[in-house]
Length: 571
Image 1 (cartoon, rainbow, N blue to C red):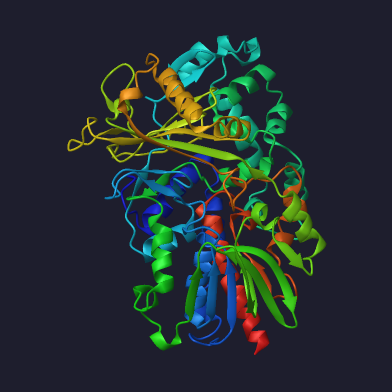
Image 2: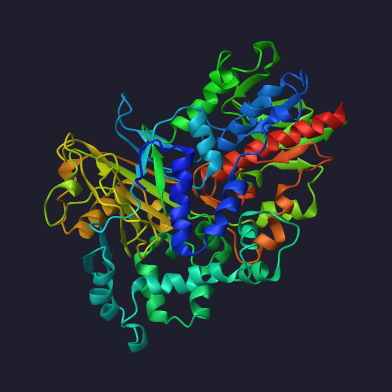
């Protein structure tokens, strides 16, 4: 199978099937597709226009709030969306450096797995163009403890094993062995019929899932008697794992289960085109998305930007949203509410009466991973030049330096391996296709490099530096990874943009990434409605695909359907 642009559903299924066959678990295909697919269309619950004059408040204009609004509009609801900032999309954040929007980088979400059916549902509905996101590239660099190598597994054994003093018993093991022992082995140890629990929220889980839920990623290695020196090496050259090493093992296994990092895509023109398409659908009277619904049956949607929700309280059978706009306080009454903001932000919202004990506990305790990203616009694409420091088209370099990951744009690449079969690499077990520079492209044109992508402590330590110091550190560390002398990149830099999601108002954290035991304690309860089924919840944090657009979109659609079912009871 070839990884084409704009893959059809059938092509995606075949690619996913190939990946699962390589793992020896093709029986997982049906469940992955089933549980990551969108729910039944909301019009199967009630006819279009059924719920005119029922007022719904949606808190949050990210993907989950957008999806909820788009679907609820089909049934005629009177909807108000409260967005605390002046932009839509939440943690989908494409930054455009030019007015033509041809030069851009992703400060939030940046890739789409082929298995994420709900994300692809909207991509297909809005006819958004996609191309392969190059996850791995042997020409990229690994840099640790002052040593730079090209990202080949044999290089790791030759140069890094002695550097990290791996014991004799591990010196002849391929680097992929450690990941397979920690993750793949444990995934395959779960009975096939129980693996689906990794991406579902249930009141109770089987003993196999509960045992894994008690473990961190570090525990997964230690249980397999992997040496501390090998663990140190793994942490050094896998930055995102380094940043989430003490978080719940289930988070990693759930991504492994759906082959999240195997074959990926990106939206041409930026991922923000997806929330833009959803937003246009909420305000347009002639959207093709509603082509089968008479205009008079569609609901109305009012957007209130720069409206910070301060309090949710009850007054009789109404739910009141108190919010600030332009330093003034306002109250709006609703019949039903969808809360589509992260719990890290909801923590600062007053709630009267309080939600259930477990929900309030989750709002206080649910773990969010700090994330930081920095993108740099360069005068030319130095990484693509045919030099000892270049030859890189797509993929990512990794380092033990604070910048963590460096990601290279995929827009100058094409897949030329017509006999593609997954060949998993040592970092993310992703297929390594053969990529080359397109004839019509040149490295002498401007390009955007993701100069830093990290999680956990490094995101805090780098992201919290003041801008001049941070920019200086970014450039020097990118130079180090590529083997350039200090100051080499200074004259090539046109602009730098950084986001530290932990300090970003209204987010106060990167993405949900549970600690050990939190799946058992919280995953089911946080999905439940509150206050007599009048307040519902959506967002990647209440999904089982944390940190992905899939989780936000699917929970948004589910919340809309739950509102429809509740409205039938209210009639």
